[in-house]
Length: 555
Ligand code: GLC
Image 1 (tube, rainbow, N blue to C red):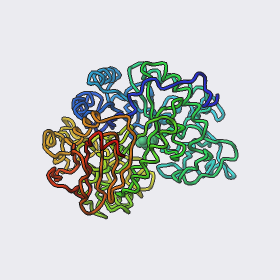
Image 2 (image 1 turned 90 degrees about the vertical axis):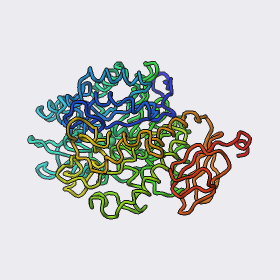
Image 3 (image 1 turned 30 degrees about the vertical axis):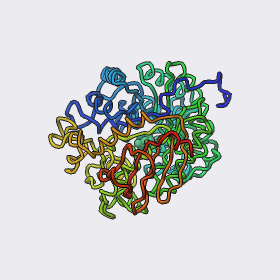
Image 4 (image 1 turned 45 degrees about the vertical axis):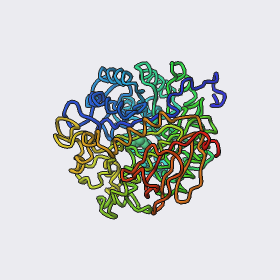
């Protein structure tokens, strides 16, 4: 089956997700209802009022399935169940119902590239003979070298080291991530059928959509001899010719999924976590595919108006090419929080900064928070879906000085302690300014929280003028009121990123000196120091303005 001619012509029937604000929950670290130090589904349910008052349209919950947590749950041992640490399927059903009762949609995370090595299929494969049907569900190969004791190819794991691990019987299996995450063989019909069952299982339980992990990785070129690809993190070619990523074959899989999604009313949505080159993002986002694809370009943007403008323009053009809507991400569970990124000089190597426990260079947190708030307001003024990461609404910074002894990200061990990894953005949330684990739960927290978390606790910001939480609430509610089909129309204002959508204008001062406030009525400012009676916008500040209909027409 070819993706472009797949069966009937599926269309995305309902598109609530096109301009949604989606809030990402990393369930280990969101809220802990049973006090065991790890967040859980009942904890998420208990905090739904927070999400409703924030004004989010949907939640996306990172994996909560049974898992040894070798990669924080992105190593799934059973795709159709809940890990006892996170609760039960009954808890999930309650959460789904309660989420909907709060007027929110629910997106779950699907991890199709690899399973846990504790998945029954991998245990079976490990025990089975080379060449057996059980091994064919994963990617096993004989080694190279005189005794087969060299890996089948030079492919490296994203988390460091070879992407191949050898079993005692001599065969090697592929894992593009940790050895505890063996890659599935998507040419195997059992694998394809089982994922359709999983998609149906969660769709039947009422989930509204899926975030598809490593969506560009499922299909590999395994033709012999295996091609050399020693640097998995290099920029991918834009013609689908990489042996491991972004191969055209993945779209046949998603065309089949789309048909399943469209059997539901409303159709289930999906968003691809694909690190494919921008030019190929529309393939994932088209209506007969997943429908939407993450754009991570803002994550790598420096505080530079030209970079922001180029990224935004390209993203909007790419989305328009496939009639999708764009997506925007400033933070998630894999990257240094944006309040910290913007607190550092533009040229900072974030890995080296983490390795120094956040000491070299020092963060300028006031600047970081100002810029983070300005970037968020800018992002929320754009058409498309904004994906927020838990804690950014509190203005949380990265916890860069976690003790080495508590680090759990496999990146830390796999790189021989060369890279600290992603734990610093996964520290459990502060809900209250004091109390056990700052209100995360009645017990401790699986990663230690720094003392300064109390200053940023939700309870401390609730109702407080100028708080980051208040800014997010106001911005999301205004965004809903101002949303229109109008395209982004750029206005060239020196030092700023300035655009109009219908009667709504957003202007961000990227300069180091104040710039004049343009004509219009100020609706919201990202900077609590901004005074409406002045006529200048301070540096690192975004303002939203309403302009009169006749002015809007002038372009
Ligand atoms: C995705 C997830 C990340 C995980 C990896 C392997 O990139 O976002 O957290 O480690 O996939 O599943």
